Image: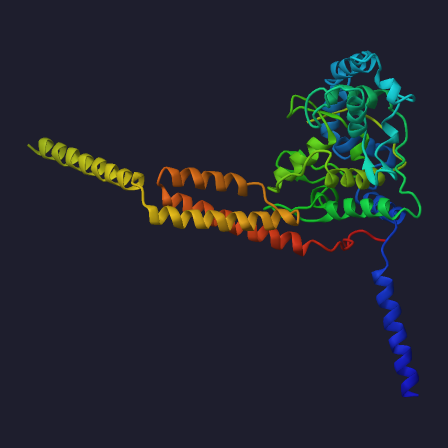
Length: 279
Length: 114
């Protein structure tokens, strides 16, 4: 009898341990995150999160809606179209690299099984330039934002659909690395991305309302009034890391590409709404 | 008479203060090889900690800046400032490393319900 009870106890404890050790799937993560925001902001429809902080900041939203009548990113879209249409020195254009373009933004980021890495749109654009003997663009400031604004504008309404290929351990590892990064506390201020954009979303940080993580990637690149220009997602990652007094990582380096993979996957099902205008 | 005496005191006090400040400045600007060597060693230790933190993705923002300022202060023979900065940089390197190691295993936060 004692042996039987001991065996039963060991099996129960073992089962319990294995349950807590089972990792969640990306789909389960997304469902949990959406559920979290639905509870936190019960009056905000899922589709509203494409508007970023203005989904949860009604006062800021009024100014933003007025700004959107004459959006500050318009000239960047025009410059970007000119870039798209202008042939490289060798006569080829971006269209030769991206036959489906410029409606492209919804295809990124994605897992590149051949190169075993997350491929982002800025990286793909620069790969196109390099192959055509053009100088690559910088990843945070400058002309990259023009062409990204144009592609983003043309891709408006397309639905975010980041795929983590079934059975591809590399892709899942990249997603998990991005997830870990998102929730890791860093910097002298000991904050994670989640500290502000999940736990404290909707709260004020000095005079600014913290935006919810859900929908973040739908409206990049973004014109920030603080920058006085359009900037990329990785520029924002870098700025956020500096704000918590962590040394930022390299734009388009592995850390930020994996982070983008996780963060964009979180917004699966949401329409693209870039470029955006923010405070 | 009283006004002249008061004025005299004020002038003397001013001269003394200026003299002390000049003496302090002179002392700070004087090279001290032993102190410079100690600061160099401290900067080296701080750099080791900075690299350890960086190796686990935990380097903090200001460590590099502090080390540059420490080196600049040492060059101006301001060893007190250099020591203070290098000590702070070293400590931040240690803390950054400890923080990154403590965060190395992902745990689903309790506020996400699965």
